[in-house]
Length: 83
Image 1: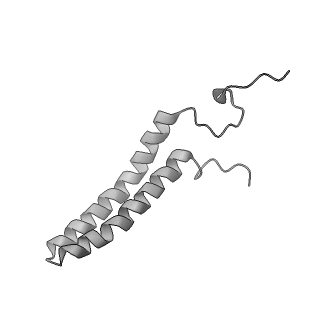
Image 2 (image 1 turned 90 degrees about the vertical axis):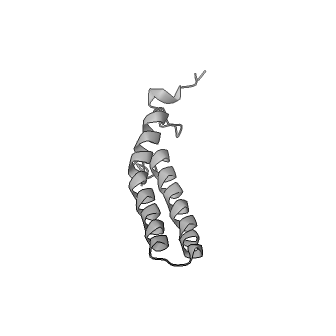
Image 3 (image 1 turned 180 degrees about the vertical axis):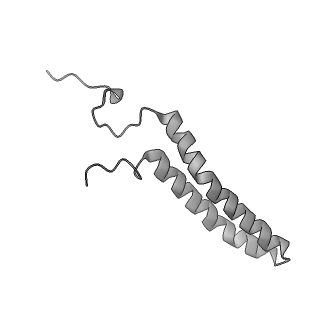
């Protein structure tokens, strides 16, 4: 009979074993994009434009930052060995 292999034994399982370090790495790489986006919103509001413009550009910035975080956390950026 085949015995199940634990994910941390190098069986190629998509379940990450170093979840904490992946989250920290993803946050470290995503933080500059978030700060750049928030700074952009602050500049738009600081220039005296209508505040709706600041809130209009904030959702795409946050959406792309979340996508970046997920990409780095899940490892699809670096763990594509099947191609």
